[in-house]
Amino acid sequence: MQRRAILGYGAAGAGAVALMLFVGWWQVDGPGGPEPIGQRPVALTAMDFRLTDHEGNAVGPETLIGRPTMAFFGFTYCPDVCPTTLSDISGWLDDLGDEADEMNVVFITVDPERDTVETMAEYVGYFHPAIRGWTGPEEQIARVADGFHATYERVPTESGDYTMNHSASVFLFAASGRFVTMIDYHEPREFAVPKIRRALEEETEGAT
Amino acid sequence: MKKHILTGTLTALLTLGGLSVPALAGPEDVVVENAWSRASIGMNRPGAAYMTIRNTGDEPVTLIGLTTPLAMMPEIHETKTNAEGVSSMSPAGEIVIAPGESIALEPGGLHAMLMRLQEPMTEGDTFPLTLLFDDGGEVTVEVPILSIAARGPED
Image 1 (cartoon, helix red, strand yellow):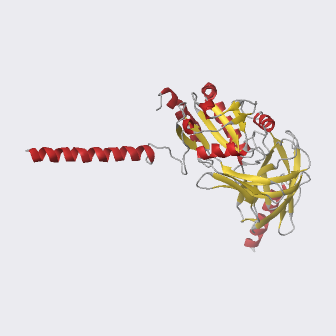
Image 2: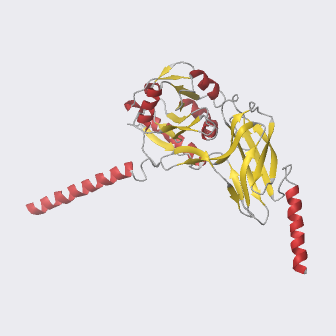
Image 3: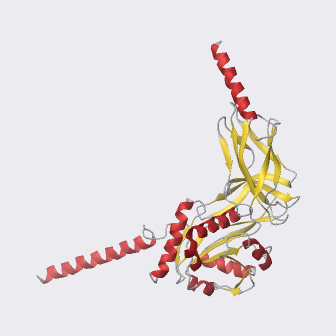
């Protein structure tokens, strides 16, 4: 009798462990988790950097807490990927309409040598007005990239200039600062707006 | 005999088809469509142009380079994005287009990279871009300059 009870507890315990493992897998690697490949950023609340926005304001990760955030890396001397990403984002923001007013949209340069505050101001002026341009000292940019687990690298070109290889994904964070998901550069664009809505909804659900 | 007449007719039709394209000169088998580019900010940044290049002929064609009065170093480049989401860009080299096939120069892939601009690219203007082929043939297209935020030829 007693032995059967112990066996019963044991089976229940094993079941609970299996369930926890399953839930963990589901949330981290499974269909319940963020889809993208590659490393995920830490929460904005765990980041520490100081930059300047294109209007000269001091900004940091705390600037983004309280509203959902869409952030991405690039540089203004980038002829292909960056204008494409910026115009894609402008299009998504147009699709979202009023909802987009609730978001931070931040374009962070990986080329602070050429992308001064003034340069960023001129550049973002050509795209959706919600897009903010952030720049700062190289060591601060490096700290941002660390937090995002993003990479960038300076590469010389034949013309004697240089270009930047960089993470081209768009990162989405909830209002709490928690990382939600990312939009991969080669992902079909019709998936983007629903993903942004997911980040917006996390806010109203009071994400932990 | 009958077969020869048919082939001749087909060749004539293809030639006519080739001549009716917006290209100004060059191998009649090459058709360039939907050319567009984005306006630049000043002259310090490289520009990019996009288009579809179609080979309507029976032989492969090999695109070996570009020239334009707009830029001193125009070159076909390719953007690649790896599994970690990191984008990089490099010269694409020679591009062979098989008979009946086309290649797309489009955002995030192949593009005509316009290095060392000689003048700013102004929205509403056009510029001539010449495609050079390995048989010495050339095709020149007028590329419209659209907004810096344009997403495609229709914008």
